[in-house]
Length: 333
Ligand code: NAD
Ligand code: MG
Image 1 (cartoon, rainbow, N blue to C red):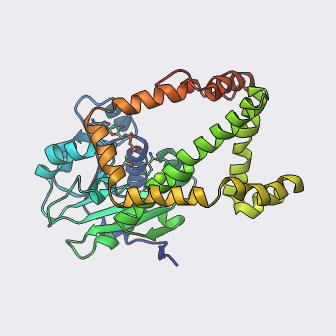
Image 2 (spheres, helix red, strand yellow):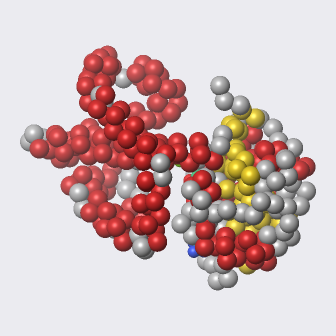
Image 3 (cartoon, protein in one colour):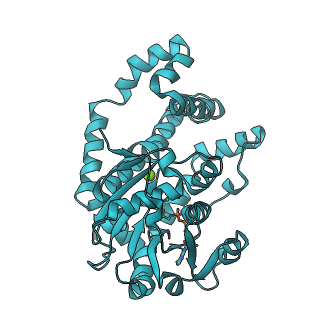
């Protein structure tokens, strides 16, 4: 079983903690740590649109080099794509001797894109939720669970420091699970590729297109294969698979047990193992890093063609009728 921590020695965070970036995770970390009594500073690009927002929230804001200077912990909360460049140019040259570098995801360290000098602790506190949830639950006196790890333990107290940061973030209230940078990175990529994002989107699209191809109305297919998914997922989230199955009809439950494994069969598991292999041997990371270095043109093209699918066109019309359409979901980003 995993080692789960509920507490951290927050008084270990006696110095300045610099949160670099004020996006989804950055704003939540800066505000939660501040409210937990930590001396927080936010590091941003000169001219960043977040500068004013962070100051209005009562936070001290500085340029990245100035905020990094003198900090005990530097939290890397920039988008993963930009972290290596910003780290090499603006963070590494200004790190205090012995300062810790903290990540919320292991990708850059695990695949060798960021390698702090040996004198620095390299630690991780990866909340298992988006930033607005990390902030909202903290304000409610609750917490978002987090994974904690140590990649480089210069001080010998890397884990304690990660737990202290996690506790100040509120993660101790929900549990902080010990892991490694490798395990966090590989399972995160696997989950999003085969189940949460890639798996679910292709399952939905395949079901929708199978019904439409067989002559059923696209609107009906949309409700059956996409819209109702939320009700099922909410039940699974609340109480696992049995709780979901308790709430559906016996007909649905019988079809679930007998037909689910016909679709998601050994062949799918074999493909999952293949995708996992490409994560473990670095094939996926090399491909994605090359795409980032080339300006992400292929990603842009994939995004555009996915938005043109019939499933998406039908969905836009139906969500407008139900008034559940998020305004920012219109059009192509
Ligand atoms: P984000 O996309 O919300 O952006 C972070 C901020 O970085 C921006 O708001 C901006 O202040 C700054 N920024 C953007 N481009 C920049 C540039 N070129 N130079 C300097 N600053 C720039 O990022 P995020 O989603 O909060 O991700 C931060 C880290 O947290 C990543 O390592 C990510 O993997 C991890 N993480 C994210 C989530 C999530 O749900 N969003 C969950 C767990 C872990
Ligand atoms: Mg994830």
